[in-house]
Amino acid sequence: MSQYDIQHEAPNQEDASQRRFFGLIRVSYTDLLDSIALLVDELLERSTIENACVFELPAFDDNDIGSPPEHIPIVLHQGDDALKLALRHIQSFKLENEHSGRIIKRLPGLISLSHPEPVSVLSRMATINHKKSELHKLIIQSHPDKNKRFLQLVDILPNLVKLKAFRDLLFANRPLYSVGFSWKHRKSMKRLSKRQLLDMLNKTLSYYESRFPLSPYNDIVQNELSLISQYPATSRFIMARNLRVAPAMNLRYEKDTDVILSELKAPVDMIAHSPLFVFNQSIKLHPLKPYCSQDVRQPEAPRHRLVIDRLSIYEDSIDTI
Image 1 (cartoon, helix red, strand yellow):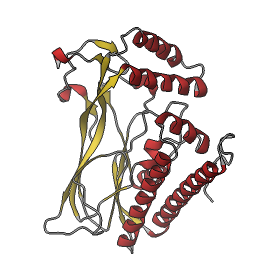
Image 2: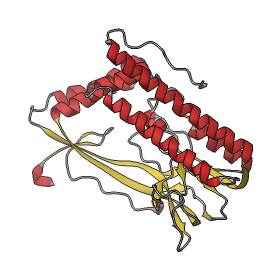
Image 3: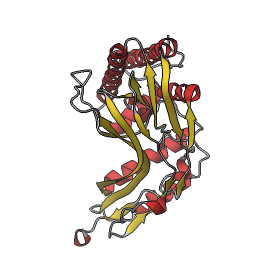
């Protein structure tokens, strides 16, 4: 059994079919946790470290949302400490430090290990990623309404952070020449009707009122709801956010080599949300450096009237697009 606590009480007014479905989600989740725990035991018992380093980033919380950092220092961990942090990271699915889980911890790094059966370990990692995907599908199928599905998930798997649970284990599926780390800026743009925006704000308010009743965000979101309610019903908005700058890694492979697991691709660039695991390889490493906003070009803001600064919500005017 997993070390994680799982509630065994289904929502009171669900019928038998739904309760069985919720039970299936719990079983799938427990199986996922157990598979990761067994993988961790395997790596600790049968692997030796070739090169292990992770770059620990400072803790972020809800107060950092919408506030682009000027600097991001890093702390380098190597050897046994790096491996322990990496293994703890891939098992961390729950809320931390009483924040909403909208900003989740990232731990870029490289864990290069020697193992007597590397293909078997990679296959187990691929199976774990498949289990993550299947669990995600089960949760999506639990209810067609996104908001109700969210509330059900809180009942079924309390304190679960989906972004943490469903992000893949990262591993090299082809012999590598080098791994380079850098910082990457990304942008998200989404158009919303007035009703969609109100629904989004109401969902946020419901979450904070139920989980963090004393949070100052309750008053902030209430004011935002009042502001949007004054707009005509046909109003349109744009959520144009510069996503939080993220550590990224670029993978360069040895020439004329094939993938190890034929059914999977070998990625080239990816967000370094977790350490990259490689086995029985000697790799050139370009480490992550501290972030400084003055060293990179910042994305331009939309040419629209700003409505909600916290969420980067703008009026959607066709004339200014």
